[in-house]
Image (tube, rainbow, N blue to C red; front, side, top):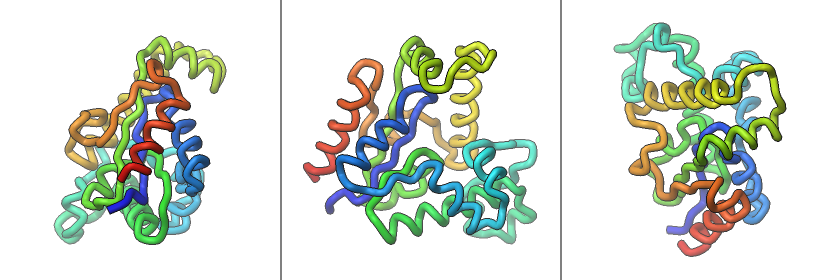
Length: 200
């Protein structure tokens, strides 16, 4: 079966979003990252700002269920706001995968779509020095040490992924391709993924 969907998980500052943009441009596909926020807000009824702020965060003191529990909601009610947000996100990603070819950034999409043979699951990472330099260039200096920004963002994504998948974020076993953007280069990462898509 040919590849229709590419999911991109990424470390903060590794350039995963840019890799996704390049792939989408090269293959003529829609890209869903921040674009998912509006769709999730419409589906869930949550305010756009709430979705944007919390769509890749987990509050374990409030969260009451893993995804496997969502199949039997009666056993896990009442769900926290964050679990409800994840369910809406899960459903939107599944619907997109049914309707169109696309590139999806983050939000556990690799796990949500792991049963689909037409999905290529990727992870973009890099060493901390490369990421620190890129974060300053891309986002500027907000007064917080860049090392702390990296640690906080990665820890948040890791906790979110673990909470809803019961797996380790960044574990190569969860992905078809893991690429070091600092070593390979952003453009080259995109080219390798495009080549993999076209070879299937």
